[in-house]
Amino acid sequence: MTIYYDVATILKSVGALTEMDATLPTGSDMGVRIAYINDALGEWADTYTWTDLRKTVYINTTDASTTSVGLPTDFREPMSSLVEFNSNGYNTDYTLINASDRFSKQSSDKYAYVTGTFLNKSLQIPNGLPSGASLQFDYMCFPSSVVTTTDYVPISSSQYLVKKVASMVLQARSDSRYPLLQQEAQRLLANAIEEQNVPFGKSNQIPMDKSFIMGVDG
View (cartoon, rainbow, N blue to C red):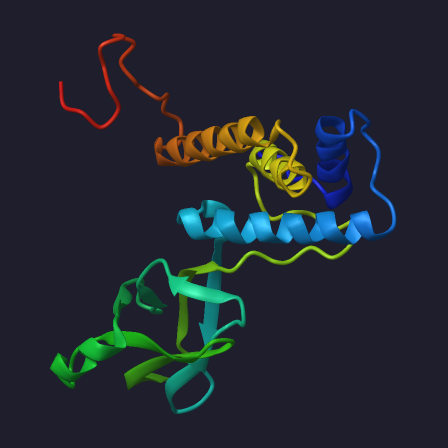
């Protein structure tokens, strides 16, 4: 079962590593460490397509012909095709393409593309949607920033976040323990990526032969 932690829990674990005291920081240190958490979340989000950041857009049309639909402000990139759920039980897929590819499409093609600027993106469906259409598609979002100690961090790899933030604290102090914690954070990040790549319900089948090297054919 995936457990998500709040900022207070993360910061207490960080304190246990950096101060040998599992208590919350005070004063300006609190603001700095919350900023570190947000920096670490942004770096984590940039490294992989995380299921933690997967959301779904639901679209229900009311106009006679809908050709543009606004997207959430946390939209980052699409993760699936756009699917229309038809009353006859058969679904229609609208392939999500790069905007630059739209010029090679035919008027009868079922497709859509994303356009717009940061925080103001929309989904364009050139051939329109009928009134009463019901559609949805998955997308990857930007992680939500945390502000207070009661906010939950949108990441299931909590130990990576603890080690990463602790390493940032120690780096700012020029503490010699910084490289070790940074290496541990990177190891935990690599493990998280590996675990997400394992199909649900399957075990990770990595050969135990000591001569086996990851990424090298044997």
